[in-house]
Length: 380
Image: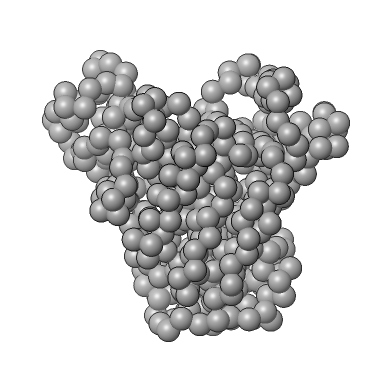
C-alpha cells in the first residue's frame, strides 16, 4: 500500500488496549487525532481514553474489519497478533508498519536470524526441538544457559535458567510448548535499551540510551542517562539505527542490549512497538516515544529526542501500587502514571513513576529500598 500522510482529525486504530495503547491514544488525541481501540476487555486502559471502543477477541475477523473501516491508519501495541487477523488487516486497512518485522519478532528463532543478518551480534545460541538436542546444546554452549520458548513469553515467562545438568528434565518441559532456543548465559555489566523510530518516509530518530535494572525478570528501573561511556551510548544508538534500516522498520522499535564484561554490546531482544523502558520519554525527552510513534505512522516529521533532565522511571507492580499513597513525599519530584487496570495482581504492571532530578547513590538506594521492602528485600 502506498505511503500516506495522515493529518489530524483522522482516526488511528489501535490493536490492544493496554497501557501502551493508552498513551498512544493520549498522544494522538493531543495532536488532534481520534483514537479507536480493539480489545477483549471493556474499558481497557486504552478504551478509557479512546473515542471508539470495539470489545472483541483479537482473532475476531469481523471486529478487525470494523476497526479497519473506521480507521484511517492502524497500529498495534503488542507483537502476538493472530496471523489471519494480520492478513485481513493488510488487505483492508492502511497498516504502514506492515507485517514483516512483526512476524520476525513473533518467533525468537527468526528474530535472532534477523538480528545477525543485520550485522549485529547476539549471545551464542542453539535451536532446540527435543531433549537430545537440548543435551547436545548444553554440551556445546556450557552452563549456565537460558532455555526459552520460541513463541510467546514476556517478563520472564516461557523461560528456564539452567545452572546444572540435573535441571535438564525440568527445563525440557518447555518443549511441550513447541520449539525452544537455548542461549548462553553471558556475564554482563549492565542491561541497556534504545528506542528508535522510523517514519513511513524513512526519517529516523533515536532516543537516549536507558540503563535498565530488572527485578524477578520484570523491568524495575530505567536510569537516564545510562551510566556508561559516551562511546558505548553512541555504539548502542548505531546498532539501533542499523536494525531500523536493515529490518525495514516503520514506527517504533525497542532494542534491548547486554553490555558484556569485556565491553561488547549484544542484542538481546527486539520489540516492534513502544516499550516499557521508553516510558521515561513522557517526561524526560522533547518528544515521547508515543507521540513519535504517531508521527511516524502518520507520515509527519519526527520530533526531537534530546534528554531534558536526568531521571529515573520506576515501575509500579500490583504489590507496589500503594507506594505513592504511603509515600506521598515522592510525588514532589515525580510524575505518577496509573494505567486504569481493573484487577490488581502481584507482578502486573499497574503504573509507573518518573523522577526528574539529578541522581545520586544515596537517593537511589533509598528509593530502591522502598520498592524492595515490598518483596522481602529481594532486589533482583
